Length: 556
Image (spheres, one colour):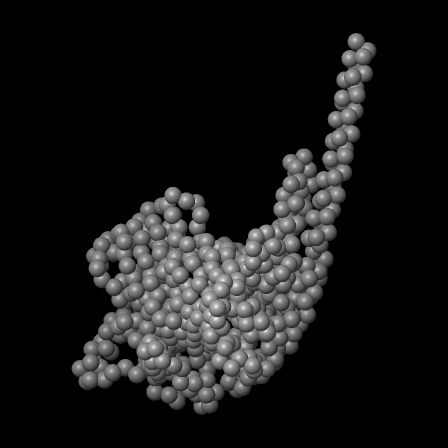
């Protein structure tokens, strides 16, 4: 009996020692996690920046690769200050505040990679650090359930930091961080009856209920594609043409980064002659777009900065398949990186892939992207395949591609990832993260799935009212009413605007008048492809004497 007792005591003693040893190991791991996730710099950021309430540089989108040192755009700020007399003092203040934000970002950028999970709204690591972070996180996941209480405490602390960072980011942009009202309820709206009445028709020309819209239009959607324009800024600074193609490819994919959150609404169709401008001193570019054709609907845009020139024309072809709807973009996207040694080698051109909205009448509506996106350049060609989701597979949103040298047609690089989560280059597990979407704002599901950048696009800033043409989208009343949650008024005004447009078209046709776009002209490429060229008149007119003295056709 004594031997059994001694044996039992020995087992208990051994088990206790093993438990204590394991506890020490777990405590050491938690200390390592705490050291890696040190938030001292972030707390300093909050205390230093909460009172600014102004322009945050490109870090507001929390892009994965963001380098805080790229946030200064002094030359562009000076150029934008000359656009309108009333903007000068405001831009000087912005430049000063942007410099302050960059200093803050430099301090926090050393801490970690700002992924889509929202770990940082003020800065981020260089992309080369992403793979090492992934390895560290995989080791942390091995922590056992015996230390769950301590881990929960650490996790909650980090969640508080993330929440605080998101609040800071929202105030630092200098623009609004929330829409005036959430999306109105669409109960009682029969999409089935609407679509069955228009089977075989081009749905881009069919008037849809305003309840199906989001408070942005196609002109603004094209500007939204520049949300991650810092990828182009980075590309323009690289000497290696292959690396430039990698970043341009990431930019092309980033245009789809939030599409999966926008399945329940569509953008407004612009009226003929409608325009939209965006001057983003915080991102270093200015943008202008115009609706140049109504039948078929064609939207064109032009954006420029000291690092790039970006332009495109978009025509959407729709197909209704019973339970789903396809949107096939026609036209091309063009990009020129502004480099002193480019010699024509930094021109890029690519197409867009097909967008499909599934489960129109039942279940959870979701968006898929599929097709091949091909980026052409004099030195390299990149082909990215957006994989079509299968009903028999849980995999969604995947994309992969290769970069080929045009001289010997050999594959010199590869890309992979998910168009809604991030893009990587290289080979697993040492692949390098090039881009990852920024964190979403609070309650984004209630506000059309808009990103922080999308929320800012339709904001009508008080000092911009006197400098915008009367054709600018921000003056469009039905879109503004929808943004304010006034659904019935928006529906009534939308119907009236569309009727007025039909009457204007009939009056012009009876007089033999053909609509001439104001800021763009139709032209053709060397291979005979139709495209639209920016006249480079808009910004000069805006600066002197302004749009007040122009005879612009009233649209609303």
